[in-house]
Length: 160
Image (cartoon, rainbow, N blue to C red; front, side, top):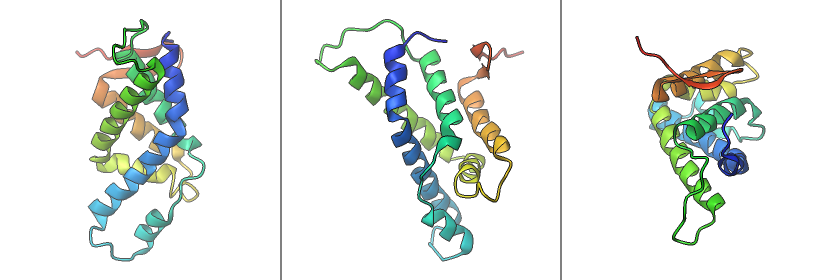
């Protein structure tokens, strides 16, 4: 429900590229964590052979992270850019940096890696994609201390 349309547009333009990077990053983290010697086994081979084609299943995670970024760090007022850059380029660079840092942090967690793999590599076998989506959104909740409501949008968590 924010008003930063330029930032949102920049995020939408980068969506497919950044989601593809996420899948490739998760594949690398998986191999480093579970098969550092790169020995051939059926699961590792499935992960290595996976080519991202339709990443719609990761769209809710991307949209939620993008919304949290706009909520926490976005500003509806344009600032002066003294280096001559376009605001769209500035937003794309800042969003990409933030997204890559967050996904690096998230990939350090076993549950996140498994959730992304469940939604991509193992989706035909794993019919319960909603559980994996919930696990991924849990990382956003923990990291930024916000809740995402369908009607209210993003709200700060209240700590007792």
